[in-house]
Length: 373
Image 1 (tube, rainbow, N blue to C red):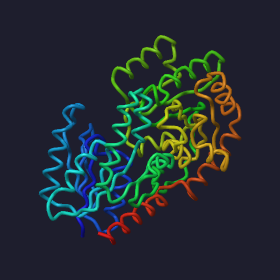
Image 2: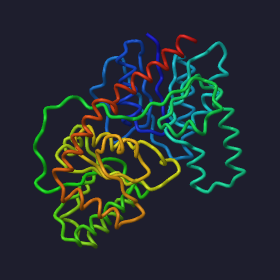
Image 3: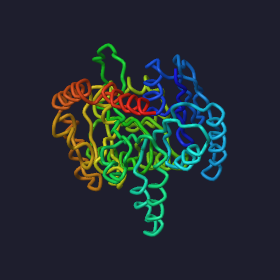
Image 4: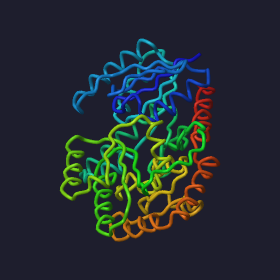
């Protein structure tokens, strides 16, 4: 059984993609002893599956993360895992250093969660600095045996790679549950995920305010968390506009409980802003809504291919609140149509947009790399 290091110096240990999807998949093969090393969170690891060990790193400030890099280097040098998968661009430097350890030749795979050059362009980094980063990144990527892209669009900027690559989308892995016909008494819009301005936090509240002004009967449930100051800002908006009876900020919730809330809701929401890193992306939460059998409203630059093929939701221009209100009212006032959309989404999830399909691609890449090592 090969020792497999699954590491992050940024993500919490219980990140859905890196722990519940990938670490579980590798552990279940029986080929790997997975050592999952990531950042501590407000939840403590329990019910850890066989073949997986979880080790927590302290949460550090951006400047303090180098201490975690040092800790990771020492662990890797001591244990010499045969396989390393890492999830943060900042660890590219560490992997380049690992390659210099004498008589040690691990398989190293970069699971790319974001297109860093596009993120930097959004932040208006000067062109010369961006060019320097691209040059450095290109050199550091030579340390990688393979690269996994979390979005299809990422590879457009990485066509120079000569190592094996694959796209592995963060589709849901939902255990089969008994059919639940129960729905909330009032038409409920729901959101599950990180809460921030770039992910539509304030947009959801403004939409609710407009629906109240139209005297629509509904509830909006928002599950997740964000920066404390931002959440306080949203709470103030809710109070100032008398929306307490219409919007509930649920905070962090275990996924099984959150998924049950999604199943009982009537429509999901995913209002990402048109950020370069998001353009053309496949936002995970929409596939969770599909797995739960509910339709969704989504930004009009996301998963349009899925909507065209399966007609399981509606898209809206997040920069045009009138358009968003129109689409929300359409779902509110067409419950039978919305339910049919939800059923089509569930069928799409079962046939195409599930983790089992992505797991097969991921494991195939590692099988290929291990056979060459």
